Image (cartoon, rainbow, N blue to C red; front, side):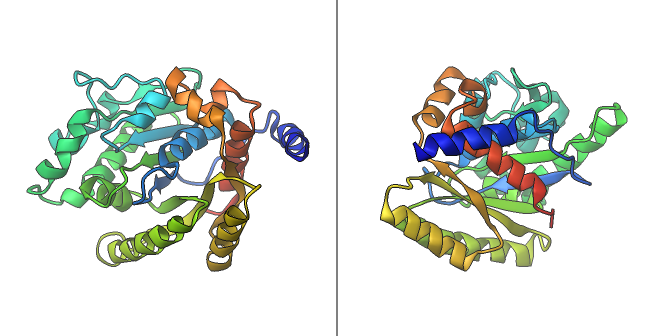
Length: 287
């Protein structure tokens, strides 16, 4: 009953809400070395929620599994031009970006399984860590030249590792958003990730900041989830979003229909939580 009341209040608060466009394009990499914490769900659902709020959003799928592309109903079989062609063959990103069905202002740069080989092929390339940053800069310039509206947000979905694909994503971004599953092991993984981000900041991207931490798969009924959430908030009071993403069957179901939960079941608890998280993200100042 408490959840229904909260959902009703949240629905009223978000109804018809239009987000304010940031002063410049915010490039946010969603990263966590630990698998299964909701990186892809967070990427696509935040992107959908931001687009629903009237913002121009690009999702860059940098994970060879291509799950973000699947959830956004984007073709990503081996014949489709993808992020592999951009990173390895220097293809302009404008040639691979596809419009996402159901959302007028949402686009996706898909990933195919070929991207798994990019880790090896990038090793011998000059300035291998800057390939994605350069591609995004060229794409934004091309949009401007063609008279298309400026992108408000670029969200990059990473594989669950710290290989060259994730390094490219972190070098290209100004901000990192870290999804954390509300369980004990998540805290251990977080400290390791922060050390790696700090190392990368020292050598490759001095302006990179961890701007947001989002608690996912949160079960309010368990004492453990509340304890983990409190520990994260105690250690990172400024970065941790107030909104938490609950465990939700709807969030898990949506990709099997080629949809985000925001379009699949817009009034579900999970969809409302991601829309509230998107609202919170837009109101937090860009670093």
